[in-house]
Image (tube, rainbow, N blue to C red; front, side):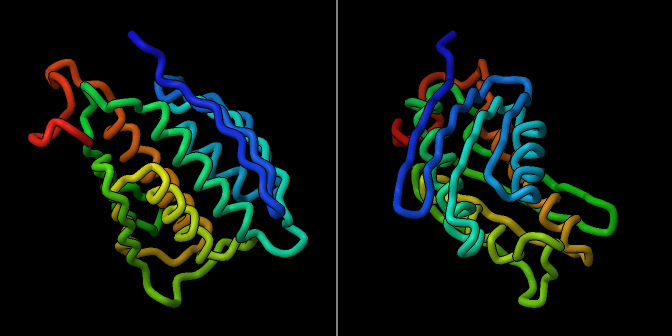
Length: 196
């Protein structure tokens, strides 16, 4: 069976990124973005998606975290798209409800090649202590756009900013894991158009 792996490098005036991913891994990761809370979220993403992920980011975090978070989402999306190849034999769709104490999040993914993010959370959603909540949405948008996936994220309820961010990253991982999984009953590309 063909390995579903990819390596990406991205260098701009704001960030320098080196990334490797194996979609059929066991959730092993080595993450260093310079943002400890973001590292924690990406370790969770790797673990719960069963994606082996190596990531090193040097970003202008002295300005703020935006460029590092967004560019990481871009690079991860590009790498996952490359690793999926033609998408033959995959499940294509994935859904996850993720509880985290008082928080419940729903994430639904379609690897449709039609990029769209629907991100629904109240305007007053609290941030985690060390990362603005708005950057969780920016990461999801960059990932969806560059993976060319339809991604719906909805905070059903929650109060703690850490729990909310963690539930979103875990839910995203679980939904993507389900969508990326090979299904032996799927012959060819899972679309009546025979292309994704």
